[in-house]
Structure formats: structure tokens, C-alpha cells
Length: 259
Image (cartoon, rainbow, N blue to C red; front, side, top):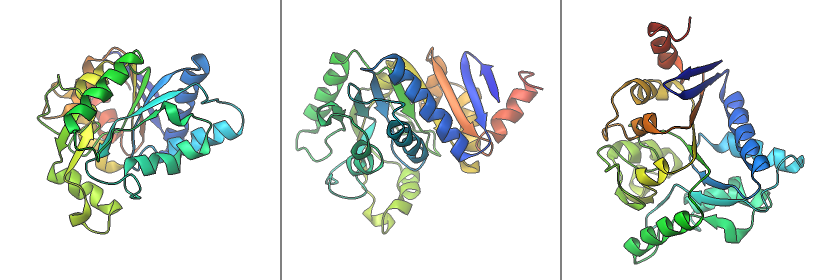
């Protein structure tokens, strides 16, 4: 199903695999139209299927990453990149090591620098020097965060050091041996960076995301739900599986957008 609402395009797919394939095909379309695309990449469990699909497209010679530049949304603070829960490790394992992207074109915030302010400023400058991001992939947290922009974030913020909410720490504990091992801080692109991207694709799956997606799409634009800001972007595609889309579809029916 494809629905257009408030200038946003919403795809509802049957399941996680179909959602992942759709997202990968859209990324491939971007790269095939512009070989030197600048991609903004997300981590976590949601985009893993998309990365698997992109790797398969690469193996089938249907996409070439040789000229692509990437910027990751975020990285844990003071977690060595060799740690298997760092986002640099995640990206290399799930994607970078399996395609022909140049290491010089890969950018992940440096979470182990003593000069955090300098790291953040340099990341912003580098994104700007690349004429901003052509296509940004986003997930959404249960509390509405995008990247690690937690509720009450300043919308004008660029890349910055974030104190993670307890909700986020608990949600990410499943990736660590215990909740005590989850870093309490992260470096994240800011809302300003995200809103300057030319196109956004937000992907979400599972019933646990249904409520926050409804708030994101139909509630007010507020720092309390950071993802709500994408209502103000002029090129947004949202790809959901059926479980995640449950309340969104109910609201669209109530508003007469769909039958």
C-alpha cells in the first residue's frame, strides 16, 4: 500500500523483509541515479535487513558504491570502535566490509576523542563540504528519538554529545551483556543536520513502534517527539511493516485519506 499524507509518502509492506527490500531498492535507485551520492546511514536492528538487501544487490552487480560517501548518524561515547557494540563495528560487519565503498568515504562520529566539541564541529563541516546528505535513512526510537536526538532536543542543534534517556538505555540493553554495560552518552547528528538532508527515508517495524509513529505523524511538531520534525521536511518517505502501521492506518481511515 502507498499513501500520500501531508506531502509525505507512506508505504505499508507485508512484513519486515518486504519493508527492508523496499528501503534497499530506494537507496539503490538514489545511487544508480547519482553515483557519487552522499548517504546518511542508521544503525540498530531495524536497518539490518536493508543492509543485507543492499549487499545482495551489490553482489548481483545492480549497484556500485565506488563513488558513494557515507555519514553515520551517531556513535556511542567512549566505546572503542573495536567493541562489537560500537556502531563503527556494526557498519563494517553488516555493510562496509561487503561492498566496494572506499574507506576514505566512510564517516562515523569519533566517540573516543578527548575533544568532543572539535569532533562535532568537524563532522558538521565535513557534511557541509559534501553539499549535505542526499538521502538520509532514519529509524525511530520508542520515545520518538531519531539518531540519538532524545526528547527535548534543541531543533537547531548540529552534531553534539547526548545524554541518553533511560528508555533508550533500556531499549539498547538487549545488545549488551547487561544494562550496566550500555553507554550513557553518544555523539549524534543533530536535528539541523537531518533537516538539511535532501531526502529522508524513515523505516520502522513491529507493534512496539505503532504508538510513537502515530504521534510522529499526526501529533504536533514538538521537541518532546523529536521525529515529529520530519513533518516539516519537503521530501519524506516512510516505510513500515503492517504491525508498525496499525495505528497510522486507523488514523488515515478516520481522516478519510484511505478507505
